[in-house]
Image (cartoon, rainbow, N blue to C red; front, side):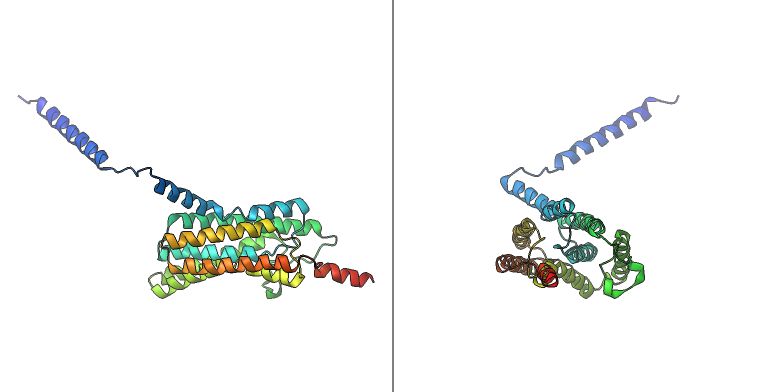
Length: 273
């Protein structure tokens, strides 16, 4: 006779072994201790992810409210778009902390939104429509001065595709990986340079959000300290120090140009005379 109990016993034994293994596995799992230090680390990581976006909110709101983007340099957006695209590519060659990677993705979306509002504001403020300028014209004289938002998207797609292919081919060459890492953080460190130059050209800081620069400075100081304490690659904290220096230089311009009218207003006054 065939004993039907034997397979059932084996099945029960197998199930029992699996259950025991599951409990052992769960027992070996370690849940991070909720300590003050861990909480500080989690808050710092969260601040790194979304903190970089906040300085641009006042500028975005100012442009939407006034319909004027003359005082803001869109090359600031270009700097951050290039920097964060390169930083994402750098991650594939040399992994760094995940919050910094997520921050780059969020920053790219934010900069595109800021470019969009600047283009829209320029269209609204024009009495006579200017000549249409597109990325597909390949006119270097009007680089990053295009009149339609889609051209900015096209450029970023082209740049990301080309750099992505180069990175895919050279991913195993440490010199290339370290170079794009340096270029990424150096471009971000030069974030304030276009704004500094725009202020110098106008001999005025009118139209530039002082709140934005103040938040830049606070964020850059926090970021640089974070890089040093978390022992991130040297490219990060060296360029962080440079970034803080440029922020301070812009604040010096605010003080220097406080009593001077913008050059555009001076020219208009002279023409009227």
